[in-house]
Image 1 (cartoon, rainbow, N blue to C red):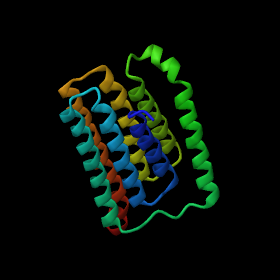
Image 2: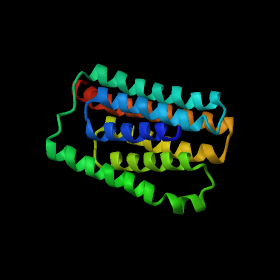
Image 3: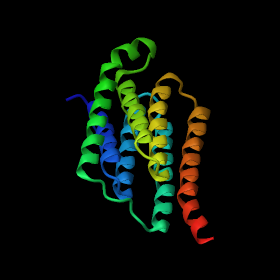
Length: 191
């Protein structure tokens, strides 16, 4: 087993956790694993300090979303077995698609294979999450996942401190906007 397959496994497992389990605690565990894998792969091309910025900002966005869920005090309804099976098959298909378009993507995007693989997995996982829900919490997680995939591919192309900072601000903005939309429904009901 190659050392670069371990973070790819982190990304695949985190994608499945984010898709299969609807509880916000499991979702935050999946998000934390996802950003550990992103950090691990990006640290191979960018300096460790810049890769750590992506890790910390991702965890901060997750903490912002978690604080809104804690103050909301309710869980998403438990999904039935058929829903989990469907989402699992969609994610399996997404991973297969990511690995099948990898050779064509390598000819177009001059990035390390592990970064491109992880980025494609997260891009597809984010699109699947965005397509399967209308919940603001799950939509925020889908946007963060999609953006993490884009950041991985883009980090292999450009190693700019300014770009890392701006993408970090976008991540925090997604976390804050998601938190606002989560809490706005309860504020309208009480107000």
